[in-house]
Amino acid sequence: MNKKFENYLKEIDRLLKPLPASERADIVKEIHGSILEMEREHLSDQQILERLGDPSTLARAYLGDALTKCDGLRPRHLLIFLAFLSLTGVTGIFVIPILGVCAPLLFLCGIISPVAGLVKSVGTLLGYEIPYIMFQFGSFTPPAVLVFPISILIGIGLILLGRGAWHVLVLYVKTVSNIKDHLFDPSNLFTRLFHRSVNKES
Amino acid sequence: MNLEKWKSQIARGTLEYCILLMLRKRACYGYEILQKLNQNPMLASTESTVYPLLRRLQNEAYLCATWQDSAQGLPPRKYYALTSTGQQYVEQLSQAWEMLQDAIANMKEGIS
Image (tube, rainbow over all chains, first blue to last red; front, side, top):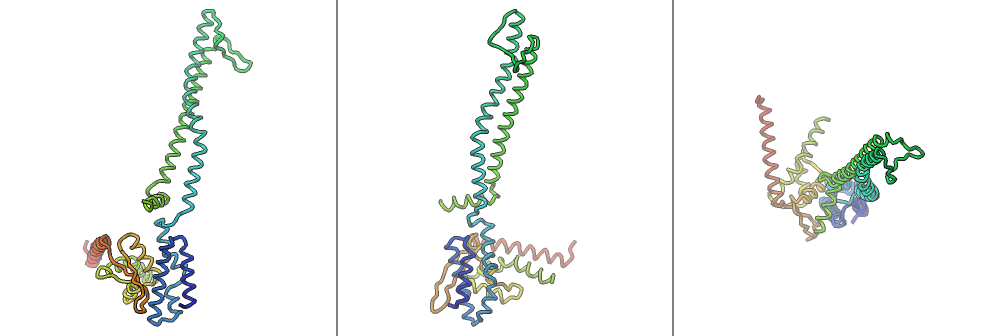
């Protein structure tokens, strides 16, 4: 076979690298067949090459079709998926347990604080000094009258913090799950690739 | 210039239907399909449009293909035939085509 055509077919084969080897061989064989048919019809080499057109145009016609259907492995999507897994894996280790523990504990403390304030104030009123409950902010110790109102304020603050921590936790979980849904959306290319490889195995 | 553009768009849009119609009668090999298309100036095509199209139809299971390897000095030929899904698909395309023709006929008659 003519050296020009040999090079042409080699170039096609090279450009079709993203396709599976068997499919590539089939395509090259069919184009080779076409060249032989044209030679049988006594077309000149130049005419044949003109009709086949630029190898990259021909290859792109095959690939364009295959890529929109996700025939080949798409490294970009795989990378995005891996990045997603790593990021949620690493942040999940911290975010979920810390917020999961903090939120209910902050709530609990928010309830304990006014209760303790009430006990302390009642004790002071009755003339008892309860040593187990102390209100102190650095060097500042509030006067007995202010203990109960301050304890209520602290309680509200803690409960608000707990609620905030809980909302952040819920938001985090929802966001992660939304991103996951998006990555596995049936209309998403990555998912189709994923299902394809699963189908191939079965 | 606009006319040529329009013609090529029509040709591109109907190429699939034309090839499937051709295969409804009997199995054909790729080069044969090309030659038959090229007998009609409106449908003239090259390898770079027809072969990828055949492959797509094959991947979509509308066509099945068998290689007939070179016998008596003939080049190896890949024969394409309609599958049962492909046959159903052509019928659907034919129906749609008839609807389009009716619609065009209506436009010509100027039906309100």
